[in-house]
Image 1 (cartoon, one colour):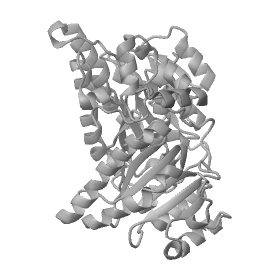
Image 2: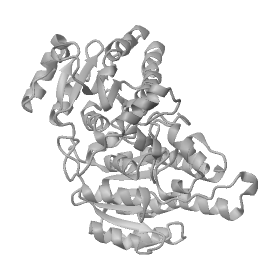
Image 3: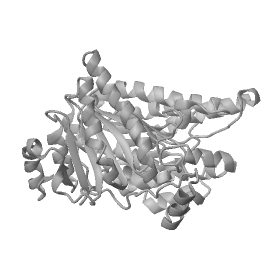
Image 4: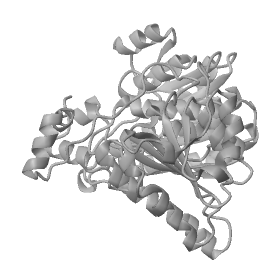
Length: 473
């Protein structure tokens, strides 16, 4: 489906004309997205600025992560930080550079600000001083990542200071969206610094193109099973993944992303009209026609994995039966809750013995489950329920090193959204920081990252892949 404004936005003359006429219509920027398999050098030759408050507790982690991913590191305050960056950068053949030596017309690909030691309101000025002049130097589809400590620890002023960062980042995301750029917050608990590099790299990469205004918190909650926490080609090599609702849309994109990363993918959908089996053949995977809401679905899946351990489970299957509450039937309610929520609870329970230590479970929630929506009482209830289940299971399974995370898509360009009335579809596209709909691949990239060994420090999260949707923020 064609987005006319996005097409116009890719034309420099059209953008100039809209600005000249002063038309109050946002022309969205074309987003820079990743293509091909995940690379060890996801940030190759990207110019990333690092700024910090005080002693910059996370500087060494950032230096290692950025250098390993191939970035060129620029330092806002060169002398105090040079020695922290020199070793990691030179190990990968790249020395740190002073921002002052960079030509002012040269664009930056990203900015990282370490506010993890901020404990007083005055410390927040670093956000203002380090970003005020540099955000204008971001190239289109640039990235800003602010590093912070847990907002739930410390005295009242420290907690207030750390929570203030959240509001800053969400607001900045909305300002940057017109350029296709993003801003996100990465919180790092004291004992989990070694797990943070992969998340930082992903948020700075083109694989997070439709993720903005979000917060991820790296913790040591899930027991370490595989000490390898870097980003690697074919990270899922030798692993088995199950994707429900795999025939089309987000499910098909997810199956492709997991197969790209090396997984053997079992593709499950309610029926096989040719699309499911074609996808499985394309990926050298396996097609399973199964009604995930059937009473015996769990037992069928348990038998399927009786002798083959399972490493990744993606609960993507979902339906809508949109009706206002007064017009909703018993069947509408029962069908939505059965497919979208009950099936997750029951199939995971059945599959648990087959889950390998350190496995990954990823559920699909929705912005509607966070914000609600007219005519979607059943759907929103089911997707909110997914969030509650995800958080509870993440705590329960952490001792086995199993992580459980949810991805909550916003407006994604699929067959389902193509059927929306034109006015509703246009409003849904524009009411976000990036002023456009996402692609199934955007959601798939988030799922693939959560499925990777590098994401061991992330569990119990609900990550919105919504382009900074203005509802439910």
